[in-house]
Length: 92
Image 1 (cartoon, rainbow, N blue to C red):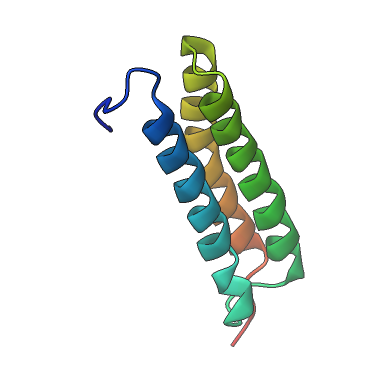
Image 2 (cartoon, one colour; image 1 turned 120 degrees about the vertical axis):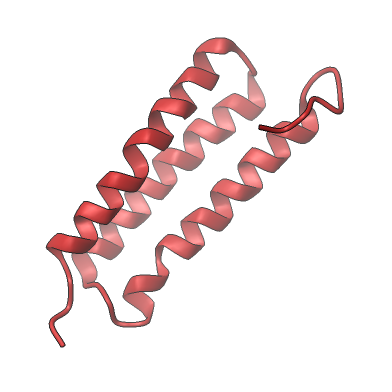
């Protein structure tokens, strides 16, 4: 949870988008260090961009509906990404 520093929530929106971008970059690391394959890489990009899109939507038009969508996306994102990693692991 972030406190509302600005009445319009601009700083909260910037924090959401910057954290989504960082999460997208970190989500690609398993492939780059050799723990997962190309299927995971493509899936991680798709999931990360969808999550980023939900974050941008909330930053652009803050509403209860867009906040709920981002919450739902956060609940789906991690299990889907971990499932992809389990399915596309690189054998040692």
